[in-house]
Image 1 (cartoon, rainbow, N blue to C red):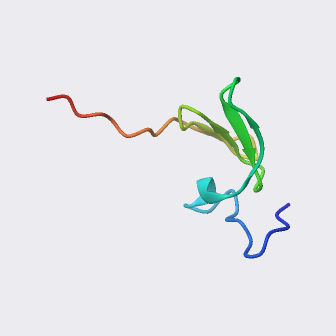
Image 2: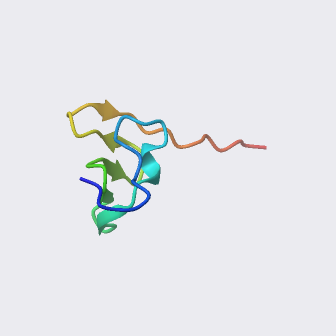
Amino acid sequence: MCQHTPRCPSADSPDREAAAVLVAYPEQGWSLLCNALVLFEDTGELLPDGQIITPHRPLVATA
């Protein structure tokens, strides 16, 4: 799917979130990346094969 040089990381790469954004819908809370990954604003992900990656936003430490 990627036409960039250098190529975006594939959807199964550990750095898959670094792919370029193709379409962004911030009002709906998601973006479609160049590697066909759907990235949600809560850091959850939907991979091209339908696999769900749960949100992995860092926890905020409370004092």
